[in-house]
View 1 (tube, rainbow, N blue to C red):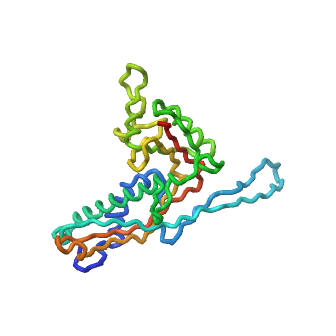
View 2 (view 1 turned 180 degrees about the vertical axis):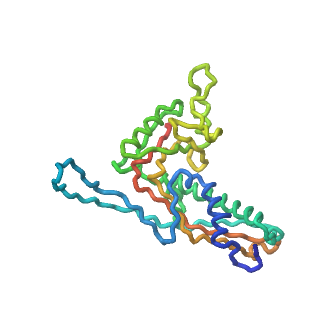
View 3 (view 1 turned 135 degrees about the vertical axis):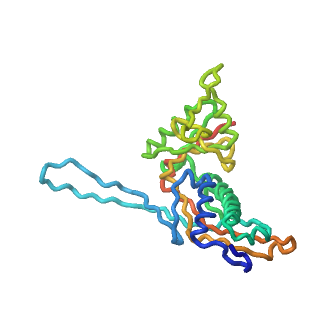
Length: 283
């Protein structure tokens, strides 16, 4: 790995996948709860069925009445998110894969935090993608479905959320909560005087808990008092493939460090907002 030229790329496209993109997808919660698409295009179009085709019972040899199926589309235009980390000159001159792994993982974590903040929020930054927090709730039939409880003191509201998603043909594949709310739920017991947790355990990941068979995930990017029910197939994270990773020796010249910059373009798409369920508390 060479970093002797200011503004030079230090990783090949294949290495970027290995040391940056793959770790980013593993680190960001947004990419774990949504469908991930990598594209070479400036924008990505998600087809959304409009009118469904009509089938019917017919006699043998009888002509069936033809029907049309129409489509709408949601266009996602990924925008730039950038992370910069300083490294020592000694590390930059290490030509082995360990250096690239350390640098890539650091940048992946940095970018993942920024992407999750946008995905679960509604950032004021005009350059940020519009996240779940920007979506309208219960204003129209096509909006996010909202539920309100006085406190997270039972799991009934999660069963209701699953039912709401199923009512529009979707299935919630993850609940995402702020760590404080996730702890509140984790401390719930089956009954008074019992020490047995109300949440189920995930046999594939012992540290993860399940609600109605659905994983409960944690993210500090989710505001306290809000829990999202997300069907993976109804939320899309689009990543442009033209990811870059460059170095510059001038930024930290006085400390003899080198700046490593990664640029990634990411976008969010919601082809069926009504499949999402937002649970909030009144306290």
